[in-house]
Image 1 (cartoon, rainbow, N blue to C red):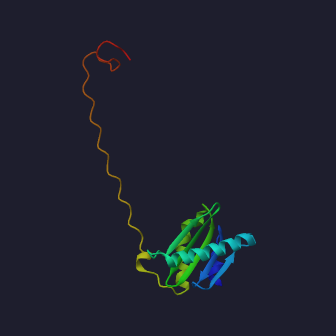
Image 2: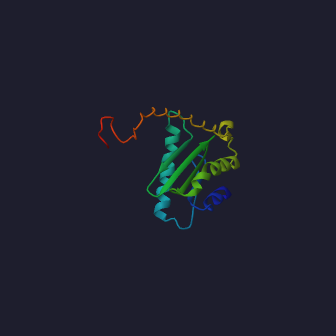
Image 3: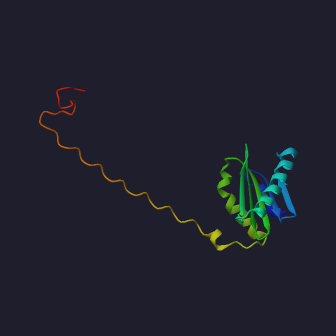
Length: 150
């Protein structure tokens, strides 16, 4: 499937899944062991069950493992899962890649997903510190006023 190949050919992505709830198509990069493939397939299946059973109807689940991050997103019955090396820079592009794949699969993208979040307001200026009181004549600031120096 061309969507999976496009995802797994991106540097840092170890595996991907695309499909409906009952039929997921998986693809993995060449260096992934059979043990990891089976583990990630089972994890993505459980993540899909969790999305479907969620009372808050979340459309995305992210699981961080020891060396990988797994993200599964659902949109209109289409599921896209990605396994990426934990902390890899490709993580910054994952939302865009998932949205693009969902669009290619024919899932409608909601308008609020395409909108950028509002920019954070600049921090409020800190009030200026009050000026120090004037010193008495002969006060060099190194005594306590009783003849005791510091």
